[in-house]
Length: 156
Image 1 (cartoon, one colour):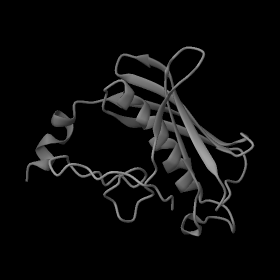
Image 2 (cartoon, rainbow, N blue to C red):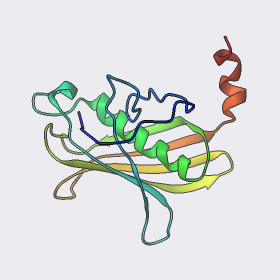
Image 3 (tube, one colour):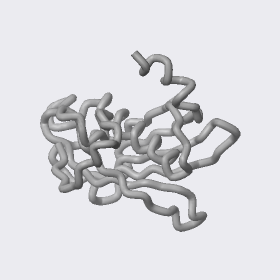
């Protein structure tokens, strides 16, 4: 688990229980993403520095593939926030290029590839300290109206 210092949300802000980045999930990963800008085009981008404890073990000494996919999905999903868009994952592919080690400094970078109507295309990569790509994903996110999609089920 990554240890971060951070401020608490105001009491009128809805709680964020996202497993990957939610500060209010006591069992979550508490990943902290920082907005960046891709130097070539100024496209929206995010980065997050972290290390993974043995809690996330798959093969001995390495991260479970589902956790790798979770990190990549969350990193790509953050891109939509920079555009003020709420979108859900529609499709995602993951290339597991090298084992992702536990207890080592890592970072994940994500960036927007393109937008076509409601579809937002993104790319994310998990890298080690040597900047070697360990895992890469591409995803398609579909912009939604959260009130229309979730409003009825949340008004119980």
